[in-house]
Image 1 (cartoon, rainbow, N blue to C red):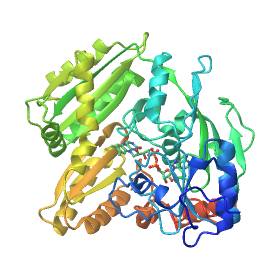
Image 2 (image 1 turned 135 degrees about the vertical axis):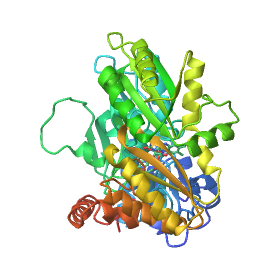
Image 3 (image 1 turned 180 degrees about the vertical axis):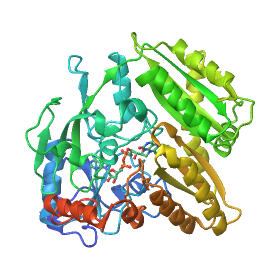
Image 4 (image 1 turned 90 degrees about the horizontal axis):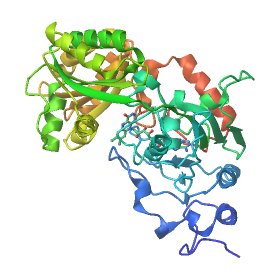
Length: 470
Ligand SMILES: Cc1cc2nc3c(=O)[nH]c(=O)nc-3n(C[C@H](O)[C@H](O)[C@H](O)COP(=O)(O)OP(=O)(O)OC[C@H]3O[C@@H](n4cnc5c(N)ncnc54)[C@H](O)[C@@H]3O)c2cc1C
């Protein structure tokens, strides 16, 4: 007797009916989608590239169901791609012909905050914002924030080692993971959720999965670290005369405020003016400058107070390190400045012929890199436009170029990034889109070691095949 889900008259081409029968027996009825039942959203891609229709979609609701799905797919050598919120920007979740989808969208359980250990346990499909809000309600702060917080999931954040605006203070997602549960390609469940600060019993397998882009295992649950909620916070938007001045101001703020400096973002005029026009908002600063900075301070009770932040900025204005500044005076003003910064990505997406390069360069070499790249890219297309913004505090630039010769220009930019000691992917991973340039930043020996790990954990290469490397 066929156990196919309702609506599916026959198995999709190339799919063994026995595999579908097995999946039907381990998943509830609405958790295996075939044919017309598959919603178009599974093919969404933020970069607008072609995503093939999936052979079928699995929507497990528990770690055990994930395990049963993977064991079945592994037995039938059925390749699959793991889906979180599909906000990834390197094409990792894009579906290739013949692949099935394993979506974590039904796994959204979130435990109460554990106050004593300052952690929270979240299932992989929980949106980041849900975790942030739960932490806030319990009097804590979750350290990572990114523009896609409402849709991006904890599993996707871990798989891509997401960064965002407060890496300066709290580190990348890697630093937030106190414990992890993962399922290997053959269905084996690895559960290490105790969240011990000290545990030197052999290899740290949890960290192996952080940033592995779904190629080594499927993240199902995580114990996440929380931080004390700031007693007060403020941000300021500044016009600065040069990149050198912006870096000098960064050093001054770090020396004075220590870890209280929680974000230090940069916007070149094309980004600032573009996003202000895009949002139709009044310019926070009238002064025109060659560079703008958004700095944020988060003060704990015993920390350096927010007033020190303001006086440090006053001093910078007096010394000519900054040309103009506005410090937020209310939560509304604070949020308006962040909305402007957050909206840069949407502004960029509204333009034609854009290629966004998510790169990092050692801060002391950023000026040199920008100069070299401007010259080299103008040689490719004299009318090329640059929209540059990003997280200056950690050297991560969103280096966006506008040109019909996007591929050639991006290739050149990535080569120059590597020559300046940088990384071709600071936050978004490699996925499909950056695979051709991985070799610029990683040696053959490193890539061979990565392949060795992949083969050991997923010998049939069913998980996210062809992402990161071939
Ligand atoms: C407006 C906007 C702003 C952004 N800002 C930032 C930013 O500041 N910093 C930053 O780092 N990123 C940013 N991103 C990129 C993106 O949001 C992150 O990469 C995010 O972590 C992806 O989460 P997701 O749930 O959407 O994952 P998906 O896009 O669904 O997947 C991303 C990758 O992870 C894999 N994956 C997903 N879930 C799992 C799982 N449970 N187990 C194993 N593998 C899995 C997928 O197969 C894929 O390879 C931004 C994106 C947008 C659209």
